[in-house]
Length: 133
Image (cartoon, rainbow, N blue to C red):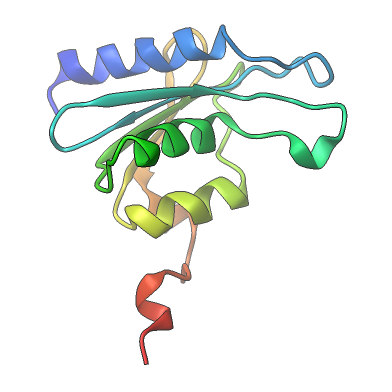
């Protein structure tokens, strides 16, 4: 991915965070998920008074993409106020489709806090091949 594409993906993620519904935590998160074909799916966190019903930005982006027929992903940018990390549930859901996904964690100024493979965030991840008998 070239720098211009990465910059656009970072911008998309930060813009998505601006659409977050976070009346309880006030912690806005955005995600921009990129496919090898060049499509981008964005998501924001959506909180709920019944906390378990809350959905993270990464999963919103993934669900949007999968519901549109996508199955392959190469990069995700996650933006938070402080460059925070995807939660464990998001890591597991992303791993299902893209164990070698490149993950970037950025803050709202666009500064990259981490850039590396999903496999470094989910060591010894459980995936579809683990169910093969």
